[in-house]
Length: 371
Length: 236
Ligand SMILES: Nc1ncnc2c1ncn2[C@@H]1O[C@H](COP(=O)(O)OP(=O)(O)OP(=O)(O)O)[C@@H](O)[C@H]1O
Ligand SMILES: [Mg+2]
Image (cartoon, rainbow over all chains, first blue to last red; front, side, top):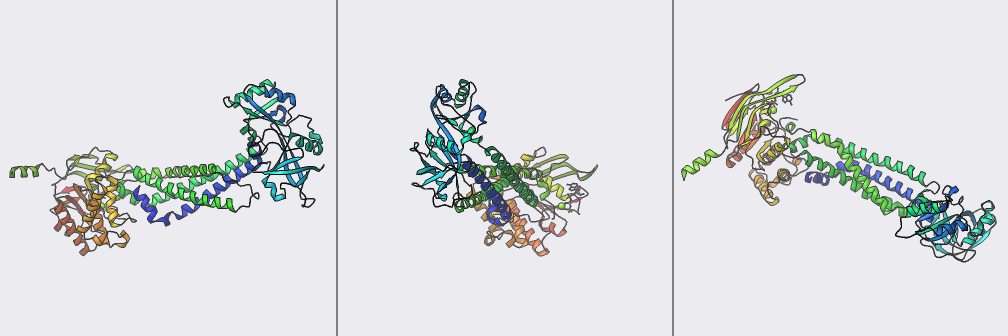
């Protein structure tokens, strides 16, 4: 172990190639993770910010907000289910918005929410014809005090404040009272028609002592199957494109980790072949295979840890360099941590491929060979 | 009092007792008998030259005496320790603690200094504390005339200096028996004689036994006794 450590310090040039390749792989892994999290965030953050454990859709909606309708009577039924503490209606309309000062064709894509229970980071619903806007819409000239016109009917909406990090289907969000949302929906998407008191879905707060899954089942039972209740996480995953993006990215991430295993395995297998003579001498002096293999693993882990650290710094630098809102890229600490852990495991696993070779080295080959 | 002293000397076990040792290497379907009925006893501070032509079984004998190989038949006792039936793990520990090797080719760890090459032995075995190992290494390097070279890498040393470092490494664990496999074959005549002189004085000053393998007749001047080997059979 000590010898392996000294070799790392005294002959760093031997490990440069492997470290460089692993650094590239680590950077790629962090970038992929950041892109995935950024994409997911852009598609889901408005839903993920809801303060309720359960989202209730109508059963024929296939878990889609635009297709779902919850009538006032259905809502009353849900509110009475044991374990339900609070119920708030929610609905969303995706519209183009005209912003004063922008060209007539330069529409801002917005997702206009009507809500009752304020999600994280959003105040209580504003007055009629007013909305809070997500900060990503600032780029489009949407600021407090500005009145925009949404949809073909040019429904005016006055912006009264900004909120952070809430998007839906990669669109910046507007947060308005239920009536403001209903009016805009009925004026601009007549075929979607939402009647008085109707919502698309319900945000349900569950008694902290109750099991959310059990409460969700109870809701669907009480409504006679008229609703489909999902945990917040499941509702987020059911948003369009989310699970596909996740599985695609996770496959690429998986392949990248496999490549890291192969790189470590090949590199240290070659190194072990090169060191056969040295290992034989050390075994003749009484070193065990465990000690020698421990040294290989130590080197593999140190090289990979270094590569991961550099990769993380590069990924962070990219995060800082990207102008906000241009590319969906969110580097979460949890993602950095899991990527680093995956790489270190890949290193240990890659080293295992050298184990057999280390075990097979015969100490007797150290003596008498006049190499 | 004198009786106690002399009886004490008698109690000291032989450094090596090989009895009827046979070693057979498999060679495809065939077998090679590398050593046959080899019986050899070394006194506790005796230096023996093992002389024989190439392929006669010298390295095989050394490997068995040093616990690098196990015999096909016969028994091997080193410093009173019967290693005949030891498994790989016990043999590794035995090598750590009881024997020293000097190989034909100088096999120093290339990225460690002369001093660290000696300390490797202690790091593998952990017989003594760090401080003790360091002072022992420094003392050995001094005896071997390498004090001013202790922080040099093997690549910065001459062939003779490297072989001296290797001798120091073999002595680090205070062995009962040191096995030299052609220690001078990579050196020129003059240097070879110097190294043999050094080996003799180091062994004698410590009272350590040694087998020196060679096919160079001149080396026998530096040893107490010569054993000849041809085709795996020993002759006094
Ligand atoms: N691993 C092995 N497998 C098969 N045969 C071997 C093996 N090692 C040695 N031999 C054979 O055993 C015999 C003795 O070999 P050994 O290496 O002990 O000779 P040596 O006296 O040391 O020779 P040299 O002076 O050339 O080093 C030789 O015939 C050799 O070919
Ligand atoms: Mg030989």
